[in-house]
Length: 347
Image 1 (cartoon, rainbow, N blue to C red):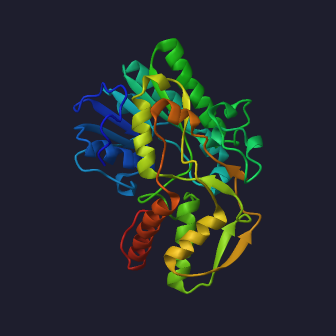
Image 2 (cartoon, helix red, strand yellow):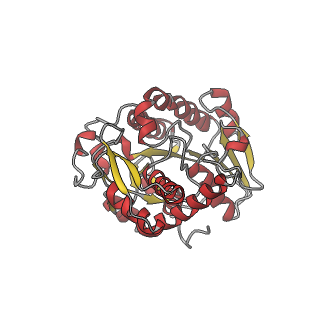
Image 3 (cartoon, helix red, strand yellow):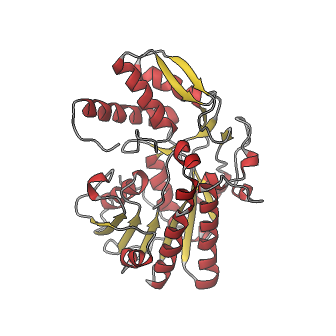
């Protein structure tokens, strides 16, 4: 996945510099490891607390460490000798997980505190932190047609309980480590990342993967219905994984964005019902929709205002949702059928 020429505004990273990616057993960070590997970087250290066989993606030739980064000494080991650190490790998942495991989400603050201090002590040149649109004030997200959220909308602070507070406080750590100690930090607020190689079953999956899986299961099992959390009007912008990876690279190598939170997401707003429409179209089925109004559903509407990222980078995530979801659907169907044949898959 070679980046376009001139992707980095300030590129001081050599091919043999050590890049550390935390949370690499997961979807986004595992894909980021592959992204840098494919660019020809020869020293990459991938870190996650999950046992190696449970990692979503493992890239040949990459140093892979199984470490719990909520423990300080493991963070020191993880960042030793690093030029750049990409901190994506967190205990999180889709809305069902976030709403039901607030303490687990909050405890990720331990990872962020220990990682940024360890990075500072190790002399890391650039430190990227993956924040979230969950950091935004929930009072601005009560309508499916709510206006797109701009970066200043995080204050006055009223983020989602648990996960949102963890992200917002960790952003402040990044800003203060730069202001007081000079560590160059970069902060991207992710908006619903999806794509192949992501979580698609087990309770941590997000809406695009969950809906695709449910439609695929209905198609292959002969069910004529789908259960939908909420009333189907909830609206989000969804960012395809390739756009997310390019955005991380661009943001981390733009000094104008040092210690400055920025949206990283698509501005294409999609309702859950529209998501189901597309998955049904790909499957060639039409299902009865059974709405579960008491299920976790999150805020009513959330979209990314991309004015700032276009102004600074002259770029924004651009993959049309239909195109990205088609690739995601096809990959999940392959995984579903492989599991049905008794083959081992990572869910």
